[in-house]
Image 1: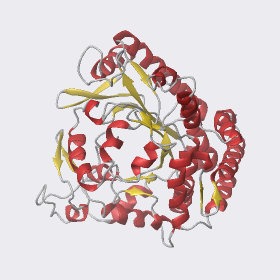
Image 2: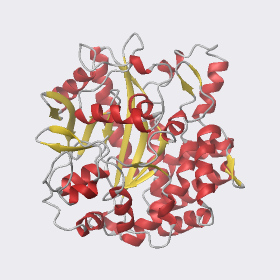
Image 3: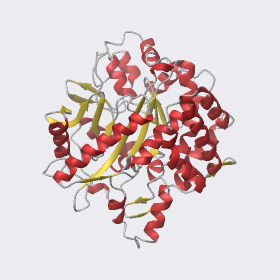
Image 4: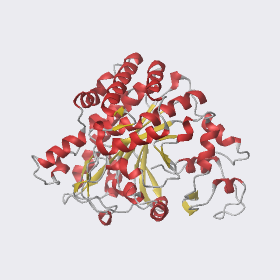
Length: 447
């Protein structure tokens, strides 16, 4: 999750909120790719890494700081992240180790960044006796086994999640994702890209599904991580039906975010509890948590990080529907969306696939993808056929870019051809070679 935002003066007019989004628009020549991915760390006893100790999250952060030139980020005297050359390492609530990559030009750059990161992580982890693995949900650990990272934001969210949904703390502490952040050229370009991102997010969910186990057994879903998101907090998650309505634009998205209850306000290194309060009241200087005070643009930027739809807009668009996985899939996810989004012919073709769907079909595809992966079907749409078309469009889009990036999609093309995803293979191993011993997943899915 995001680190606190900084900069930006006071908000003097509500118009500044939409202008903040509009300021992210860039000419095509300046479009970049930002990839984020999370992973679970564990000890020799196959338990999650605690924050403190010789084999710990803190030791990992300090090892990267001391050995590889990362600058520490601290909260209340504790190291909670790192920054270097436009990238940052941050912690999810249960200690999931996240790289938020720098903004780069090609998937080759993304792959090189990932190689460097995993090499550095493996070096530090090897010295302290830790390992890391990439799957969408912790396959065995219970909630009580998970550590809690020393971040004020997470303490507030943990309490609130228990009041508004049934799966919120599962998301926070026991899931991992891979995301890609992409640019837009204008308001109209943002709208088209957001609609494609939302409508086709179930395809990414199906293709990248890697979380068929939870609490030590099969859970009946190919992507339990995706299942969790459906019962988390309806006010801030989902497929955003309004994005497909006439009049969609920056202001319409702002209106939705304004209606999402707040979590916090960040001041002087502290998270001030504003749970359930209204940013609209904040704009009027009537926020109960800070009576008489009005927000800054950094407060707005923080609030925008507390909405979690399947595709999210800030000054760019985040694709949020995929499980974490092995290295080839961590590179394939950004390749898929860059192929669909960064060539206009591909973007138009992708929209042609989805533009006739109803909100009910889009939501049904989201549900079916989490359960059945590429064997999903909803509203007369067969996921396997759709995935094959989507991958072909993305391949054409990458080819049109001319950077030789098409090979990064091979692993997804193979899944689309066979109808099998990683979750299917893991279930087969569990029933076969592993003979029901789920601890085997640690060795086989580790980096």
